[in-house]
Every structure is written in C-alpha cells, then in structure tokens.
Length: 138
Picture (cartoon, rainbow, N blue to C red):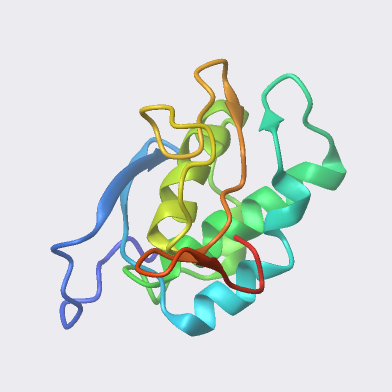
C-alpha cells in the first residue's frame, strides 16, 4: 500500500483526514486534479450519510482519491477503493478536499462545506479578490 507522502512536495498547507483507519494528508490540489474532480463535484451537492446512493457514492470516492493523490502520488485507485473506508469517513473528508481545491463554504458553517447537520454542500470556486465565479464550479 502506498501510504508514503511525496517528500518533494511542500506539505505546509496540507490538511489531515482519516480514511480506512489511516491518517492521510490532503495537499492543495493541482489544476490537473481540480479538472479531474470538476465533473464529479456537482453530483455531491447536499450529500449526507442519509441520502447516499451508488450514484452519489462513486463520485464521492473519486473526488477523495484524486484529493489524496497530490500528497500520496503512488496511491493507486485500486488500493484506495480496497481500503475499509466507512461512509461517515467519506462524507467527513469531502469538505477538506473541496477546500484544498480552492472551493469555499456556501453556508458559513465552521467546517468547510458543512451545514452543521451532517450535510455537505459542494462549494463553488471563486476568485476571492474579485468575487467572480469561475467555471467549472467546485
């Protein structure tokens, strides 16, 4: 299993998430990774442990795998999908990846993307200095 972090990457801005009984680092995503998750993110709007389905769980897992790959580049998709990750861990890690992709909170809750009710809103990416929405939305 490829748990090792990329030693050449500046991890000062990385955030920790727990998935499959292991602590992972989610570094700020590269443009390539943001583009890789862009089509999945709209499918995750208002996702919670109460409204998950296979249609929503697969994009959620894809977003998280791409989110981990910046700091853990040797982690394969198969390795990630074989981890014993709980649904609660998936839902809890999503706002971290969205934030590391440059997304922002829509609801003003303390946890990025969290409404405080176990619900996650996929945040829209914006240019903070001018307040203009960018495309694709994150």
